[in-house]
Length: 579
Image 1: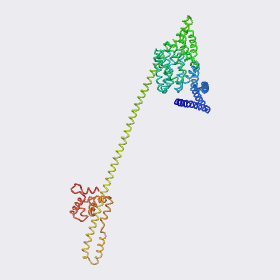
Image 2: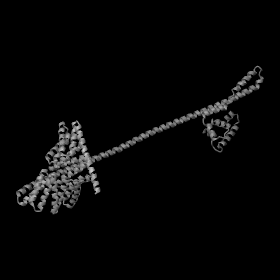
Image 3: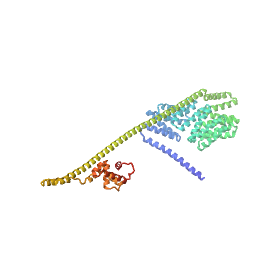
């Protein structure tokens, strides 16, 4: 019990929230209506208010729709006028003013000819189709329904697609084409089930059950009615419950179970009278008339058939008019009043022919075939467009890939070209640097040779002058001495220091690398390494260092040993060049 209270509380909160949301929406629209100045905006808001109040307060809905219509006509707003006519037609239908509704819907349809609002065209088509169906103009009804189906299929409005399938099924049902009716009812039922629309499911279970009943499958029909009864009871849909009770009553009537038939048929009539629904009253009255004929009470049956005939006329329900005329014809024939029996039979025959018109059937078949053809053409067109789009996308992708490859190739080519150019530049720079080093090496060698030769020449001249100095006249000796001193003053004692300075300028890290690899070398060996680095020959080195060439060779051999180059094919000069 406690859980039931919780469930009821949650349900109450949910319903309250929905009601509050609706009230808030209406209040917002009313606020916008009083605030807005533009007539076109006012028309739009008035039509929205008419739609909001349609199921809550029809008089208010009619008031707003009438205001919208008047304002739209005053500024020649065709769309606003068409929507207002649509709302007013719906109100007229609810009050059984079918001719008025029919005229308003035709005006709405006319006003939407130049409109791009396909959803409104579809809505008007559906409601107008219902009126054509009521008038037994099945061809026009089906044409409008197929047009609406095409519109809402493109809009992907599943709820309305299901509703239209139900109406198309109704067109076939009224003409006794139960196979086609079942097909469309089943389509509608499947869509409602997918989108979990319980009201739609509840209605379609009734329609599918009725097809099973009329095709002689009462057990299957009863199964559908019981499911429909459960759903519609939970939803408190009394109108649908009245239809279910009437249909179940007819099953029991066909089975000869008068008591059960009476129970359900009277339940149906009670609800119809409570709701003041002439269509329900008519159907239940005719069923009760058939029951009373079955139980042998034709007088009471006549009363019910007459009631059914009268209420069917109010509702313009051709099917009920036909069935009521049939019942009255049978009663009058049984009582011997053949004139009245003939009159009602003639009317019955006329109504039956209107419903089952062969011409209507053929036109409807052609219409459906045309719709199927057009639908297939549209599908093929969409497929073709998708195929073309797929090819276009593939071609675009390949073009992009090709362009990307060309760009990558071009970029790579430029990169390779740039790399090659950089390598060539580097090679040239290296070559230039090598040439500069070689030039400086030659310059350094030449300079060293020059300084050594100069010192040798000064030394030879000085020694020779010293030897012959005493042979000169005593007056010339001081001058000779001055020449000797002058020559000796030009003798470059720091020749190796100057050489090392210049050598380090050209080969900056040579001595550091040499001592790092071979720290046990002597100063003379270091000098020899420097001269070898300059690619000087043994003879040139011997001349500079005033040693015998053989001594230089011995020194070279000793250095190779210190450098662990003995018994190898490594050239000493090349090795030193790499340091």
